Amino acid sequence: MKFHPSFSAVLAFALVACGPSAEDEKNMEEKMKFENERSEIMTGALPDCDKLETELTAYNEKNRDGLKRIDAWWVALGDGAKDALIEKHRAAWDQQSKAVMSGAMSCGDAYKKAMKAAL
Image 1 (spheres, rainbow, N blue to C red):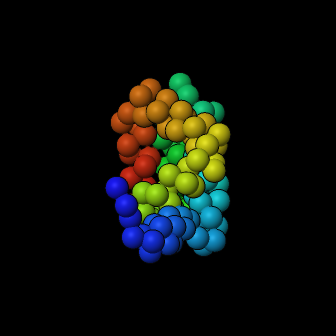
Image 2: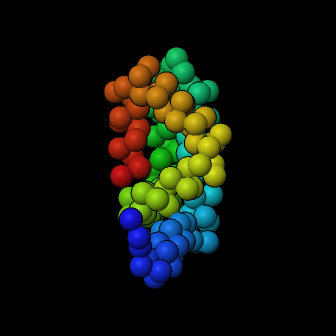
Image 3: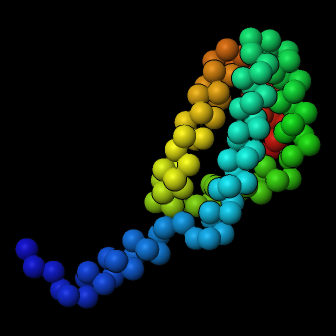
C-alpha cells in the first residue's frame, strides 16, 4: 500500500500535536503532588476508616479549588497526552493508584464521603 508523501508529514504533526504541552507537564506535576499527598493520608490512616475519612476530607476541603482546577484539566486532556504523562510519572502514578485502591477497598464508604469533599 502506498501513501501520499504528505501523509507522513501530517502523521508526524498529529503525533507531536497530540502530545502533552509544557502547560500539561506543569499541571501533571501539580496533579501528582495532590495525588501523592492524598495517597500518603490514605496509607497512613489505614486500617482506621474514620481517620481516613476525617483526614482525607480535611485535605480535600483545604485544597478544593486546586483539585477542581486540576480535575477539569485532566478530564479535558486527550488520551494520548494522558498516556504520555502517566508513563513519564509511572512510579508515582502506580504508587498513588495502589493507595487509592487500598483505601477504596478497605474503607469504601469513608473514601467516597471524603472524595465528595473535593467536588
